Image (tube, rainbow, N blue to C red; front, side):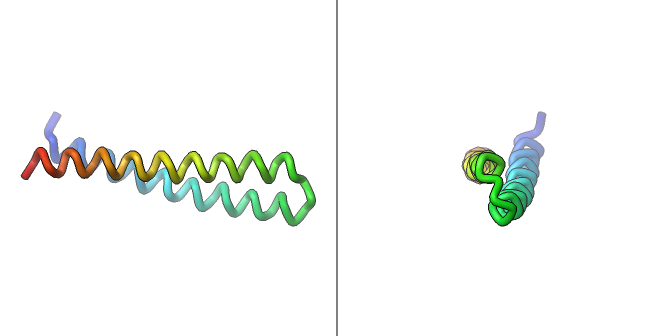
Length: 69
């Protein structure tokens, strides 16, 4: 597999995780407003995990970018 393709794949993965993080956070706010704290905590944790995964994917993409250049 081409290094540029791997870099693009990591960037796409980061974008997907970022999108999911926003969606999970929105759901968490909805459950918080309803007073459902267990569901709120669950989706808040999912949001945090998705953000961490997005940052990790960006770091991996940067490694591949350095290898290409």
